[in-house]
Image (cartoon, rainbow, N blue to C red; front, side, top):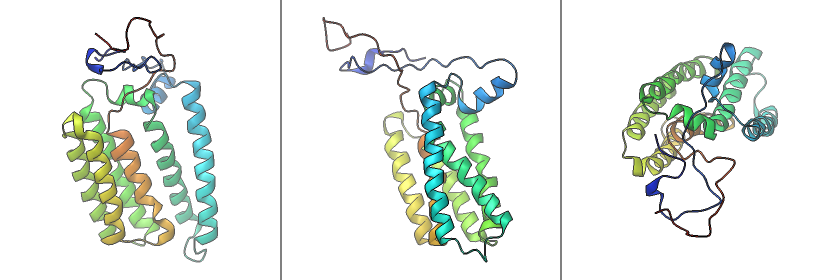
Length: 223
């Protein structure tokens, strides 16, 4: 398990601390919540997620109210779309927190991460069935893109995992517009999906601690 200040960290910044130690989940039903969101969520993390979900969800709602063709989107289609949007926006924000990074990237969790991504094949099937009028070409293309990109990121060398994830996310979004385009008002669907899974879930970015260690007068480097 990496320490708060790894020896190989290089030039030391006194305003930055990295803490990979996950908080143990709470007992009972709260523990199930912890295992989903990442135990030890701080007040700041919760606030950012709540405010971000409200603001981004509100902007997206205004966009859809303006541009969605009402005659084509019955209440049940709209409900599925709203649930997906809520889950995707919340997932992008939650998976980017330090608490989630500590939990989902603790030792021995590769299988857990891969299974989490695999469950989103059901999301794609539901979107293709309900929202996109049986657009199975879109579903098939995105299932392949998602699974291939996931394996490429998960097994990439740690030193290039982040740029690999960013590059594959760009390809996935561009590929959707080129190979299997969907109505422009729904073009945010693959963007949120791939940000959530390829970038914020799979990449083990450093979880910064809220309280960095005090600076010392002796050195600017870790020995």
